[in-house]
Image 1: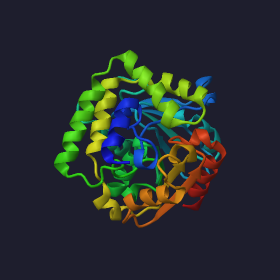
Image 2 (image 1 turned 90 degrees about the vertical axis):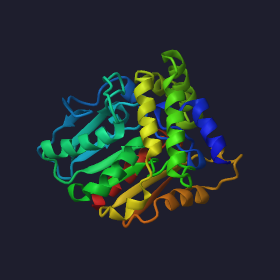
Image 3 (image 1 turned 30 degrees about the vertical axis):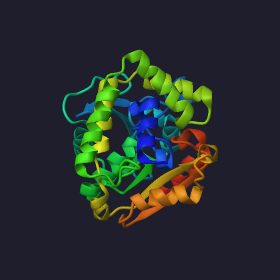
Image 4 (image 1 turned 90 degrees about the horizontal axis):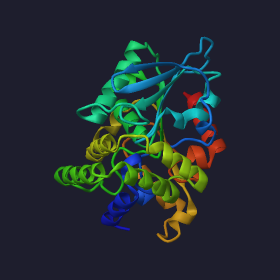
Length: 320
């Protein structure tokens, strides 16, 4: 499957809410919510704003493990981490992020990802968060990788979930080609009206996001609460990034979750081994890389394989 086909698929299902793509040769950057999360909040949390980040802080005076910062993907709110909060809050202090423009939060002007990176630094410094673990899904994973390249001294590790240092299948594009494609993506994605945007979120989730169709519909409806124009701007910023040359600068352990849902790959004749090897190739040069394959999952393994996901995350955090 060539790159042109991948981009066509991204547009048709709209990479809006997640930095679109399908796994492997069609990967995306999005973020959903569990069915439980649609019904109630996990627990009370202190809420405040730092730069472009709305933060929910789950304090823990008796925490035994490192603090954890949870960053969702494109077009999603902190609700995507509700189950993870339940699993981690007994032993960790948690900071759950929602970026400006997502989940009903007001958008901000100017470059989106660069502001998010600066805001993450401000959060760690102003809250005096000692050596947190960054857990990022999709675009949140790419953001965490970028942050680790310049601020490894401030964190303990990165747990990235289906989010890479370069947009899949664009790795051989020139800087000029990448910039042109990013502008085209932003123009096409940002022109959708709210009704079209909402329909595309559901379609994306049904075909690429999660296996359960009822959950896909719920997640799609939640994603539709985000700002389409802001989402397109984040997407363009993300597509312009190619972080590969600075991967050797990351001095902390970095785990990368690579999900694989076999029915999606039968027609493409792509094995799980080939898919995971492709992801690993894009991470070449990362000193302390740990690949974490998860079978039976699409772009959101925390929902398709929740038990395995939480086990792998806890294993990583406890190893630091």
